[in-house]
Every structure is written in C-alpha cells, then in structure tokens.
Image 1 (cartoon, rainbow, N blue to C red):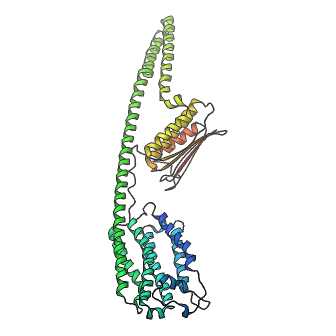
Image 2: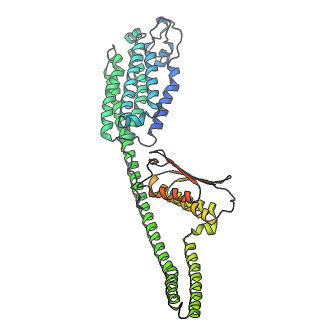
Image 3: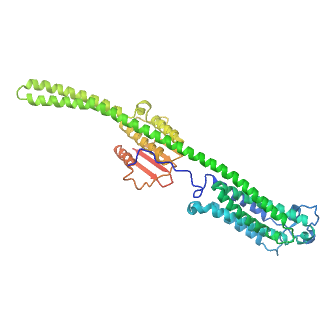
Length: 451
C-alpha cells in the first residue's frame, strides 16, 4: 500500500548522465543551421584559369575565394567530406531515441565528432584552396595570411558552439579537457597552412587566441549553469518540504475527521443500539408475565430505533463530500483539479460541461471520490508538469484525467497499488468501467465511464 508520505522528488539531472533541459533542442537547431548552409558550400562556378587569380595585395581573401571554382575534371572530395560530416551530425541529432539509448556517452561522442569533423572539413577545404593559389602564396604572403586568418575565425565560431554545449552540460574540468581537444582539432585544421611556405608564428598565435576565448566562454557558461542547478535543487527541496507539509496536514485532517465521525457514531448509533438492546431485554422478560407492559416497551424500542436511524443517516450524510452539496459534480471537480494543479505547480487544462443531468447522489459521490483519489496520486507520486481533466455527459458519464508524469507499470496493479484497487472497486459499484493507461516515463491516463 502506498504511504501517504510523498515520494522524494527526483534530484536535478546529473550533468554526467542526463542532458540538461533545453540542450538537445539547441544541439538540433545548431545542426539544422549547418544543414541549411550546406548548399551554399557546394555552389560552384566555371574555372577561369590560374591567370585570372588576383595577385595584388590590395585584394581581400574574399575576392580570391570567389574566383575559385571546380571544373568537370576537378576532384570533389572536399565537398563530399563536408556532406558526409553534416549528414552524420544530422543522424546523430535527429535519430529517434538515440540520446536515451546512448545515455551518458551521447554528448561526449557528439562533441568530439563535431570538433574533429569541423577540423577535417576545414583542413580539406584549405588544402583544396591552396592547390589553386600556390602562386599567390609565393608572391603575396600578406594576402595568404589574410586568407588563413579569415578562414580560422570561421572555424573558431563553429568550434565555439561545441564549447558552449560542453560547458552547458559539464563542469570546468571537463571543459578544460575539451579545449585541449580543440587545440588538436585546430592544429589539424591549420595543418595545410602550417606545412606550406607561410610563416607559422601568426597561425600559432591565432590558435592560442582561440583557446583563450574558449576557456573564458567555458568558464562563464559553467558558472551560470552551476548557479542554475543550485537554484533548481533549492526549488526541488522547497517543493519536497511543501509536499510533505501538505501530506502531513492531510493526514491530520483525515485523523481529525475520523475521530469526529467516531464520536458522532458513538453518540448516535452506539447509544441508540444500546438503548434498544436494553428495551428488547425488558420485552423478553415481560412478554409472558406482563404482555401489555411488554407491548409498551416494544413501542418505545421501535421509536428509539427510528430515532437512531435518523441520527445515523445524518452522520452518514456528513461523510459525503460537501462540495457536491454546495457546487454539484462539475464545479466540485473543477475546484479539486484547480487546487491540485496549484499545489503541484502543474499547468491545468479543463474541459467541463456548463450543465449536467441530474445524477443519483451515490453516483456523484463515487465519481468525485475516484477523481479525488486519482488527483491525489498525481500530486503525490507523478512528478507531472501538465494535468488535463475532462468531464462529459454524452450518453454516459465520462471522466478523464491525464498527466505527463513519470508513470508506472499499469499491468502491476496489485500489492502496493491499493489506491488504484479502491478506485476500480468504486467504479464497479457504480456499474461503470475504469481504464488506467500508464508506462514508465510516459504519463498516466485514467478514464472512468459510468453508463
């Protein structure tokens, strides 16, 4: 049987095992941008010949690159490599269920592949460009350096997104390891230039500048995420305390109500039955010796029985949910759902009829108690952020409650699922059916149908 004490709320996701909220969406947007930019990297123009390549130092690297193209006999391997890396990133980002299956290894593998793929693509493109501008390298060193610097900053922007993702998920120690990986990646990306006739100190200096910026950005992001995780933990602990307080208050209220009803039944039913028992004993004693007196005593016993029955009905009527008497079933369920959603911090969706047909009190009572138990389970155990409640009268009364909580194994409704069994028994007493659909991590849907 489930305890009334609330289950401890789950702790904040561990940065090493579960993706931080929103990180997967940002990762997919980043890959989508690369997919959209892919056609622009494959646009080609007719090659005019090496004589048309500008050699003046006054021309910028952008002008030089716009003259470079691929004719029919040119090798397409740099473009093919770019397509393969982007397609692999897309499969990594959008393959259904891949993050869950890979678990803690999903982001590290993605981040490493993202950095190495960008570096290899950049190195291939640089080597391809250098094959066309060797003459410019020999005569215009300043122009070649300008080209290398411009392409290096493009690579820097791409790799910076990887630093942000790693810092978003991990601590500064792991960010340091990733920056060391990026140092190797940038060395690979700049290798065609480092192995060329260009002076290498400006290129190495640019790599060190990139690494310094990576470290600064990583430090800032990790500090911000640490503060956010601390805030989430504080909110979780506060919610646990509020939930425990609400549960203790509920237990206290239930205990007080039980004591009150015990006193009511003792003062009414128990006293009436005791008095009737005494009177019936007197009737039994006087039945043969004083029939008239026995008849009078019997009349008093009947009157006492009727009085006790009236008092008992009054006490049992107090057991009915008072919101039903004051508001009716639809409004009582609305108030119950609203209170539950506010207490659990859930977004609430309500679909209730403006009018309802007349229902027997027993049906209203049973439906309300089932809704009360279901919503109490949602508040205590589901950990949901969204709650939907609907009530319809379309030939039959249909009550549906849905949440997006952690769910449970709906096939195992025995043993510690006493609350669910009581709900099913109430539904059978009403002549209706209760369907419970749930799964681990898939939320819960409870549907009651009363003909």
